[in-house]
Image (cartoon, rainbow, N blue to C red; front, side, top):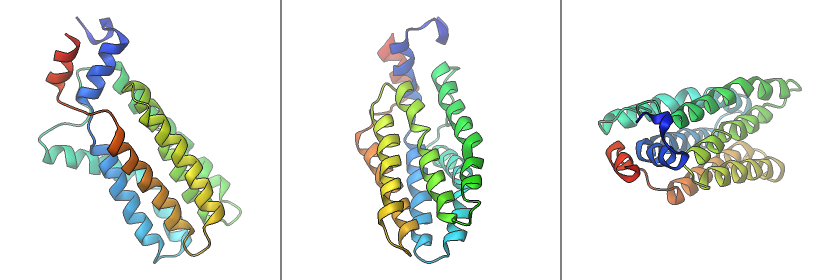
Length: 190
């Protein structure tokens, strides 16, 4: 039986079994570091750094998995993993919107845009994993980032936006459905 001959429930169980918490751990670390830097560096520097946040998260997640002896996203062709990875590409394609939106000289709009756009990848993750934590993460993160941007005074705005993202990752790590080994996922769907 191939992956595409399996039911959605079986594919979702396999996706969970072959998923990992390396991505949220890497995201948490990257955004926490950016938040700390936001308390010490100019807004423009933090905004520019946020443009590369996804370029930091993915390699860091791969390194975390390598240290665990695993290979991130090696799941024998599950189409739900393809959906999730395409979600990352979709977000990457929208990053220029954050840059264009800040053309008026407001670097915090770049940071705000990246904080929200990078959280959108949790929507396809949540659907693929059959886990509502993905949509809660994305929506809560977006609303929280808007609130931090609008309510937190300078010079703490950048750090507050990053803190919201870190809180969203902590939420997800605490409540997302457990991940396991590929063998466990195949056994659960057999």
